[in-house]
Length: 138
Figure (cartoon, rainbow, N blue to C red):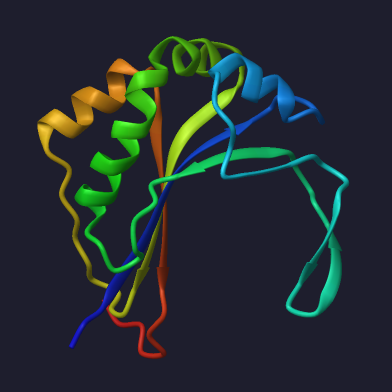
């Protein structure tokens, strides 16, 4: 059985080292935010953030479909339209889509409605696709 999981979130970078600037511009609190240079623990070891980021997640399960997660995120972003548009004009703002796949050959679909909704907010979509299979054939 082939298994695909995904994580969909709104991300803002390029705002310097003060995430509160993005919070004020958008008019909402992030689910997660950090500044470049902050220390954090990853896998029981200390690390330092290489970049600043402000994130708002879809709130869905990783097992939910890409389209469903993207629709859920857009429902969160659309009421913040003015702040999202302003943020997209001034910072590096986008929707990030992380796919974890079990085979090298996987497809996904975005409806014209979803693409239009994303575009109306001035946002691009960034896809990171990770094949978790040990067998990587094309």
